[in-house]
Length: 295
Ligand code: 3HC
Image (cartoon, rainbow, N blue to C red; front, side, top):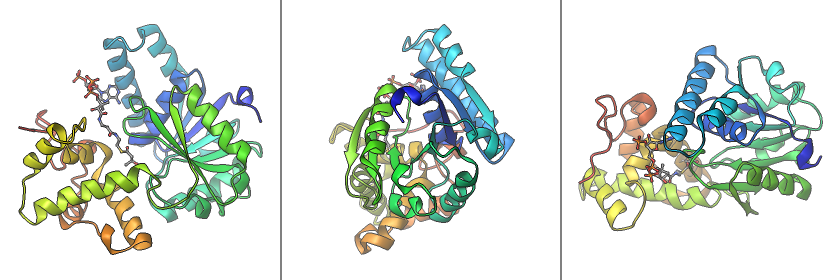
């Protein structure tokens, strides 16, 4: 398959990452089927795309006409078969848990066209292990976007043990069509490159607070004004979702060892369902419209 043969992109999962990826693909001119397991999830994702496109138009990053056209290209769906029947490229962005993803790939393999490429947006899990569930490990790779996909430039393109070179080339070419900068990750190791660096940083920030060596606000202040990061570590945790960081760390802990043990503070946030912006509370409170308070 050539890049020109890709017309329809199916995105599985309409959460933070799924709806953002669907938006990016629609902005690049692709027909997008965005699928989630419940109508309420897929409608919520669709509304998020609508909000984001109008924000981008408001800030002159695209015209209102382009925003409307992009939204028109997104079809929200619940039925898997309908979502992937005419898909040339499938990006999976369902929750970061191996068993959930494997179940999705089993269902997907039974209904997707033979020529379609499967790309997982996993943040950390083994691409090779996920590919084994399918009958097309050579047409399976990682395509890892960053939050928020519509604003973040990088895409990690990850090779599984059996991924064909053509699949990686095509996925990189598609990332470029999406206006992104792909980087090829040769080793399918937990967290790949970005999360191997970033998630331990966020975890260490939690340990600092757990051990009463700093407060959330002072850590974020140093991250922003000392390290020059665009957001504080806790602010970013709330943006990506504390459940996501936790699951990435849990997996890194299991495969790579003790150094990656999730901090108690992060665990507590997940147990209390204080997952960040998406639940209205995380390390900061978003319900009152205040958000991160960084001195
Ligand atoms: N769509 C459209 N607009 C959005 C948006 C979205 N998805 N998300 C935020 N915005 C809006 C905000 O509402 C705000 O609007 P306002 O000014 O009206 O309040 C505006 O964008 C802010 O944009 P600016 O360009 O003015 O602000 P910044 O220069 O601060 O840029 C940013 C915002 C690009 C998000 C920047 O803060 C940033 O780069 N943050 C770091 C993000 C990051 O590191 N992401 C990677 C996380 S790791 C990951 O995702 C991997 C995963 O596997 C864990």
